[in-house]
Image (cartoon, rainbow, N blue to C red; front, side, top):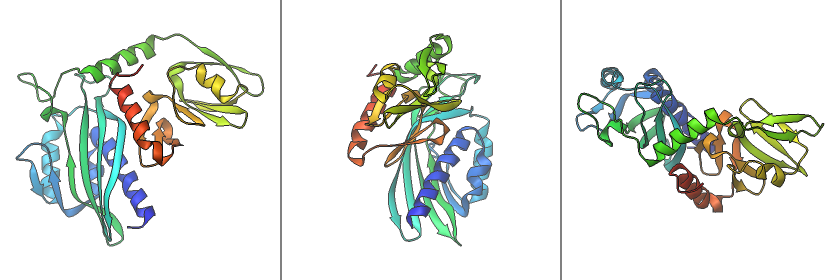
Length: 271
């Protein structure tokens, strides 16, 4: 497939999984071929045809709770002619307000095919936490908290209870009181920098290094960019996708190093 179709397949894959874990199964079904092959983790959930897939999802929907993804990584492993395969892994975490808490890495594979000019799913596999962690008697979803999940909870509590504000001046001299966890990224812009937050961005008076040093939790992934690891949405071949879909490029040669640092942070191996 052409490069633009490959990028479209990656975008559709990210959106499908986001909606899937928010329990919107119709979006996934709308992208499938009529004879799609649906493979779920359980041995008996292996079936062909969109009607069988729909019935299976409807039956199992009642056992799911809304979740969101983080630390996403998707890779195109095959692109030949009219077919394209994508594999991926990510952390899935139950949403706030869910009756239980769980956080675990999951995996997926989608085989796309160009049919009548449209990208359609020929086969789809999505793993599920209940097959990987112990489940208490009478429950269908895991309720185990691991090391990464413990760090996630600690960070969420710290974020909600942290009252600290950092004084940052914009180029006009206006003082901004910035909450550290609201920072998405800092970008070098000439002799100054741009600070991006959850609710907007502004150009700072101070240089890049000075602004980055004011927020020790930021991770420098490029000579011109430092990002908040908690705000990373996904990672593709040449960039990090942050909250708000802002992309941060990094050299291809540094991808392995950047991914290792992101995983170490997620696992609580770095502070």
